[in-house]
Image (cartoon, rainbow, N blue to C red; front, top):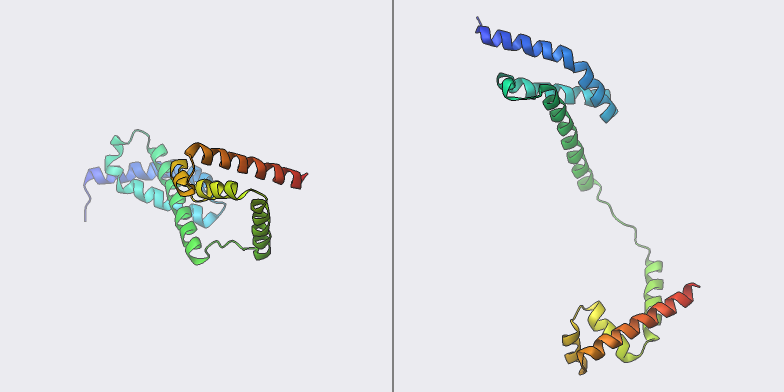
Amino acid sequence: MRFPVERVEARARFDEFFEDEHERLFKALYFVTGNRQDAEELMQDAFLRLWERWDQIGAISDPTGYLFRVALNGFRMRRRRAATVLLKLAPLTEERDLFAEAEMRADVQRLLLGLTVRQRSALLLVDLLGYPSEQAARILRVRPSTVRALATQGRRALRAKEGARDA
């Protein structure tokens, strides 16, 4: 079986390119991956992709840059896939400290009970439940400016109590 002259010449140019670049690419990938086998696989994949497009090499302004970009993109894709698989196999779960949560709830309750009923109500509606002051005012049957003032006073009182507690 005889191959067209163009294919033979293209193969020779690719072989020459491979000889010129494979060692540099391998060293770069080894530096990035820290693993000889991974570096070798990524290098082979990158050269394979370049070979698949070798007939269009004239359209690629920097074949070496393209080769390195393909190799590094392959590395990034592998890392992303590995991270995704790892998360599916071993999802990150945060250990809850039930005692700390209970202590925090008791602290918050104690701080809130130190406020007036109106301040507590305004803070609950505005800060915790996210109502605008106009709607909170309708619920509390006061003016919106009163709700804003009560919430501001409540926040100031909480900061003062928390600051005194930390001192």
